[in-house]
Length: 388
Image 1 (cartoon, helix red, strand yellow):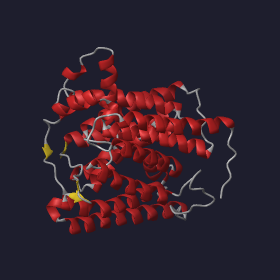
Image 2 (cartoon, one colour):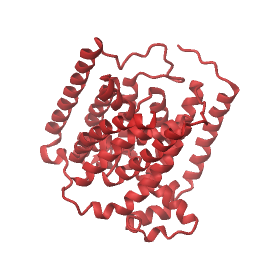
Image 3 (cartoon, one colour):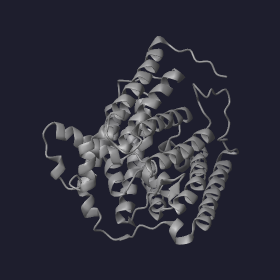
Image 4 (cartoon, rainbow, N blue to C red):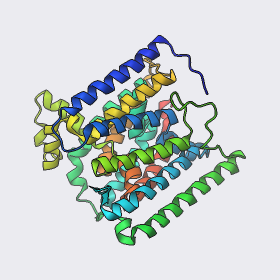
């Protein structure tokens, strides 16, 4: 087992995180909602711990694969997707999970997804994170990612106001592989693709580096203090997403909450957000009225931040850096805007569109990852401009 020398400051952060989780759970419990918001908030907290302790980042995994031919993070994602599909497909085909009605994230696949995921991919490499990565690194004390998050919120609001126009562009109707093929064949096809991608990535790494980094090597890790092997993170994310499906009746998402956060703040200062395009839909009007503490995605996002804060304190690694180069701040601003805007017009982020979309059997999830990877390649090429 690893030993951690924890300073008084780290101990205080553990207490802050625990008190924050308890107080926010109490506030959420007072919301009038049919959804089990407190359990979902706690699931979000567990997601934050799993993301932080396993350092399960999509952005770094894509960059290491595309730029350095290192495949561990990407291969862990294939395990995560395969595990999720094994859990999701039978439940979604039946329409219920232990008596709870469930449905997946199935969205149109068209130009808006192509362009939005490409922009999101660039934003990942400039902003320094994806949707889940932004939240858990903010919780872990990254001050630069606070800037990315702020502009992520601004971009999401802008994307939502433009979404009606993007929906007019050519697109295939929402298509579920589960419905089109039947869940057994769809599952077999998906697992075959994941296995092919897993071994192809491993082969690329072996050809360039002579060996393949394992994803199951725990070393001297502690399950309480971390770090966790990537395999543990992959399995934890799949299981917690499945738990979300049961509790919420739909999979895990992140980015849809960000436009709500921005809109709620602007409403507080008197701006007529409810009359803006995108905010004027019945669903968004209901969400605005309930506020962030009454929104499933928001409470799970808050949980991720606090869970990561707790994990960073337990690991003895909460250490914000306040001096950030101007070029890095500029990259975070541009990257955050692209992340927010891209996620809205692409019907989701790396979690809602890629992870949960593919786990839902949605064709748009596959379109998303193809063009997000192309965007990541473009973003990698732009990073030197910002001294990243």
